[in-house]
Image (cartoon, chains in turn cyan, purple):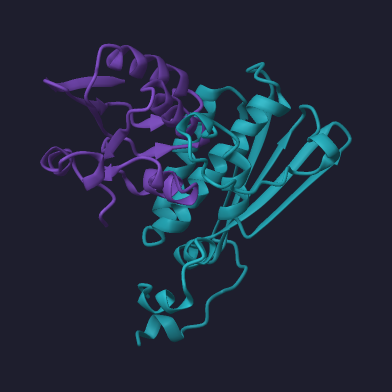
Length: 177
Length: 117
């Protein structure tokens, strides 16, 4: 066992915190994701699974704001705060678009894959990605503002992927440590 | 966006040159794909090794591309880690035949030789 593993980890202590305000159009969203990912890859060089998950979640959260909250108008500010600890990447977004329907994030479950290619879904994966790759999410409407928070574990994503794929427990022994 | 790298009788190999298939590029991809495959009748193999990121819009565009082939399969190669992840999470890796590389796709007899891993 390495010495590193026995050292106490500073649970919850922030190691990186930054905030950006951007316009919610697809091109700016893409550029912003690239910039944020560069910082996260630099911060977590050995936790690629958590960083990949964060890129997917971040893209879906910002797509939702651009397409639904601001209704694809390509106009409207989003404030993105990123806070990282050793174990968690937390993202908070704030925007002034329309509220989420029912004032709560949609449920999302993966449907059975249909037999006929024509029946395959061409969308609706966004919330499924956000929910399945995050350990915690929260939405609230404050005045005219949407506030959405989501947390992605930096490690052990592989483990939870396997758990979701309903693999037999025995397979877990073959996980890389 | 999409490069036709090889055409022989009944075989079309496409290379996606865009690095990101996302909300900003999904529609352009769908259009380019339809154009590139308009006259094809055989196997369609697409190399995704340059694609470092795909979101739900990109995945939806892949499904639309598959449907546009009207019953034929769309064989994919060279999935990078992030792309592989979205395919596995949505089980789309069961829908698209997936080969590690174009070379291995060409060496296989067709869609049935994929997903061996």
